Image: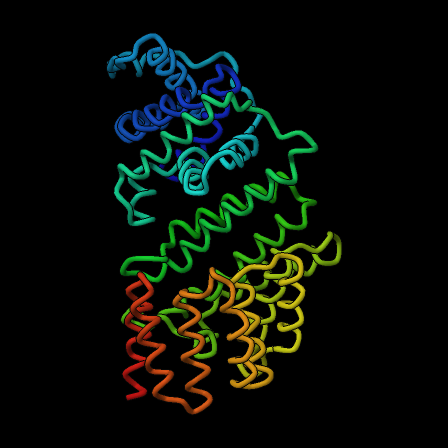
Length: 397
């Protein structure tokens, strides 16, 4: 039932917003309708038309909220006896809702929280658990986002032709952030938060269905699938990370690799190249190599160099440094890394120290490698990565 409610939540919200306007009031009403369904459906059985039931309950709740600042409780008998609407629209405005939640006027954290709540159907508590922040923090982000939408009068409509490229970039960026936080959690005791990466893939699949000809949507989905395919082999039994070149590739999910590789192959042949497609192509080269030694590092380096031109960023630069090392040795990698740290975003990032430590170890500087592993461990907030980095430093004593 949870999966059904999660699927229906954005459809019900879009129906209310289209009918009444006022995103914040409609979103509150839908959340209460979902709560009512979660309480009543297990006891009374699934309605013949669950979507219509939710729209009816949410519509009445929205009216109550509109009429009074202090919401009146609904009686169970009243909810049970509600008549279904004579007609429920089959129009699915979920894409419009996704564009609204990722509007550039909202902060990045608000975009993420609102997307997971309104489009993903996650509760505030679920989002808070996923990001390891207090529920009140998530509630404030969602509240601020809804207030921003209300005060700015942002219309509930698809973006215009002129607006669409920027708005779609915001949507893809938010989905990318959600997936990355799920795949490699920035804080906490676990390396993965599967509920986030799975939700990002689900939403990106929906976006791909609605925009089948967009190369970057396809590229992002392919990137997620090819990356998530490695998840079963990314951690040791104690939860510490396993580096890519040490992973048991027989545990990778071959079905996701096949789907992602086919998707990016088709996309590169038929759409203008963008950064998500380039990242997916790199992921495919890693996934399709039978062993780490078979990895096509020359092609990966070429793709990272192209990616740095198309969409420069600190992590792109750092990954390019690793590719340089794999092709030309630790001294070349260290030289590239010294140039990279001129970027303020990389100067104190723990991944820089981890990469430097590895390169120094390969170059024979065990003391320098140990110091940088220890520094990287102090700088990361991820407990599994801390344990891994500390163990690497200990092995060099």
